[in-house]
Length: 124
Image (cartoon, rainbow, N blue to C red):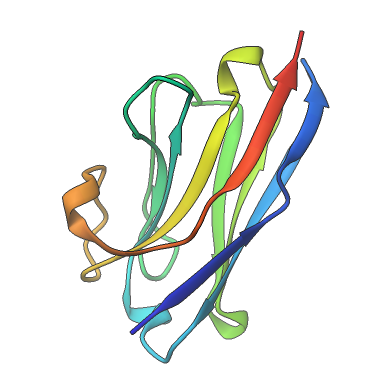
């Protein structure tokens, strides 16, 4: 079992930055890929970024490439999402997720554990 708790969301002006953190409990964190997803009002939940178990491989949605950076710290059981140059369209509830295995994936179905989400609101 892995329990995930996100933090770091808030209200920020367009062009600003936020850093989301995901704290994980459980001994299998370091053997799982991790991902961030987001759900905007009235929309389906969508992939944002993912990172392999050792941090060597990262994937990003086209909409956030060059602005967001995913990282992880296995010794601390944490994952992070640094978000720069934020835009109003980044406004959403952001979820941290732990994959079923080592394999990095953009698909929700490959993630077994989810946090409750942290709200990010970007004003124009």
